[in-house]
Image (cartoon, rainbow, N blue to C red; front, side):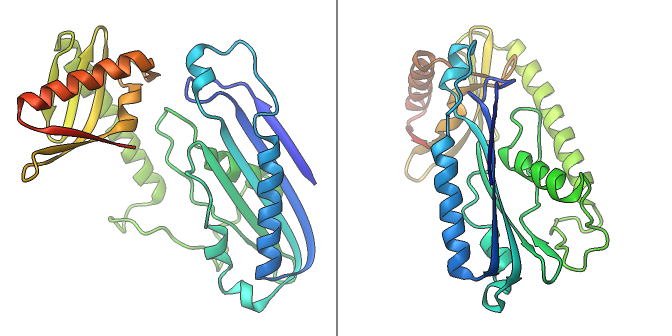
Length: 272
């Protein structure tokens, strides 16, 4: 069975929200069968990419990527022993970046009563809802009636955290709180800066452009007199809110950054 759904985006970070569900039934699932099914599902999903065009999108949304989640559910009467030992590692491979694109295979072993898939969600910090989280939500709704039976599962894998006394949810809440504090700090900084003003502090480059501001992570190599800049960070405003920057403005900002570091005796290099 193959199901496809596409919805209009609610933010400027996507040109559409697409969900694809592909289900397969096999008697015996081995490594070769798993590979064939994965290739089949990927091919079917790619054929549906962008099939529905959404109207009334602004220019920034039209240029944004699709936010796509593809869920592959494989019902197997029996899983080959040669595959079972490596199954978890296999379902976690080639899953996309998790933010804009996610592919989530889910193997239902009917003989053992075990469902194997990657259930580790990506923290949502209020900017873009990760595609992987959408895929996990589909699995939770369609296979588990909206509630994962994690608590009683002997095969549950616990996440490894720096603070072993801290739960995963507490860790995510702390991360979100830190992000809110950072946003407030950036807001106060940009309000005090003037147009085309550049400030370098603790590995972050702050650039004010008109009424907007952008924070860019940089890495200085004093030995080579070179500065590495995260190119993707130059595409999105951080202040007053997250919006995509026009291409012409991006070019002007990069020229300003190049001139700033040239004055310090450094060359600039933009990483993708």
